[in-house]
View (cartoon, rainbow, N blue to C red):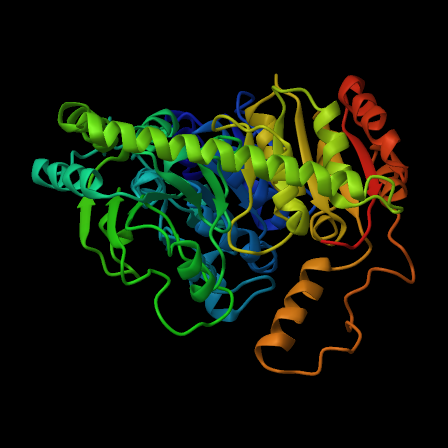
Length: 554
């Protein structure tokens, strides 16, 4: 059996039925093999970054391992940014790239480079088989490593001659691996005791809650102890219902601001995740001195990485929360339950007050021209059905998206991790493949869209019914916002223009770009026309683009 057959059989025995890729010369053995494996579908991307982004979001949406194939050294280089995003999102994906015949690598042939070294910084494991005899073991280990907590991308280089070599070692799996592990009973008891002793608890959630399907348990815990809930500043998944009264939004990106967010709490319970990702340097810890800290980690790596803990417990999140809830139910006093109820009542009152203020602000800017981001998002929420999946890369309008739409469970919302832009248009391809029967909408800023605009062609080519909404403020608004912060923090003169941050002269024409890639669309300048345009896209059964011209106001 040839190495390429072992590779393809390895995909099949691990349940892979689709690959996202960009063809290239050294990938010919793989591309040619699809004629013999018609049950594995290949989704063609016009840029390697689109293939990686689609595979990453597909893995998150489907709960399966995503697979992407990119071209040799230049193609792998093109995909590094999206690989970084997949690493930060902890997406279990396997990325392959064809490699030149290794018998001539010393001569540095065209397209050759050290692919393993290129991919190593942005993957959990990077490897190149030396012979076809290693293919089965490498693929088996690649799937295992990609799915071990913390999950993440693995890279496998595929030398063209190794793919053509013969081997007797067939594809295999690691077997049925039960990677869940129970927390220490003493740790469970300590968590419960600290929760019962707290009078103002807060829970900080990471994406792992959504990944492990622990949302309902997390909601039950928050309501049982009367806790506020905050989520990571940048999150890829929905780990807590966004319109639940206990939801207090996202963490800030500076230690000082986070410290002020947490100042009123005496106990901070954290799950797995990159919970305190900073953008600007502040002196001191984000944790106020008066608060105790508890963290539940699904991997040792996540516990007490940057924040000293009063208690850290290693354990599978679903079983750990279940046992915490069981013990709480047995040990909760009537006084504690009453106090928790009062806190929940207070959260509901605060939520209602904030909702009124938000609508008041919206009404004051209702007739603004161009329409504000808030008005645009409001019109979208009126037109988009409740069962729709939203892929969000609106950046400066992300707060409005989080407040306007109602996201209740994992699968309702997907976002990008790592801060690199362009993930939305690429990622929505994978989300639609994972959810073929649900309406799927992506909301992207115009600057972000230009990083992966080729995804429109992929959607048209594979007839993926996606509504692409481009919020066009014709500028890199988030960069202007960050420049304001920089000037303030470093006492730089602030009454100067914003250099190189406007997307004008010429203005980007997304409708024409979409048409050139086989996607119909329209440009909307009046708020009252937004809903009809989206409905037209949803009922078309085809990919459709709606460009919405908005103001640059935050």
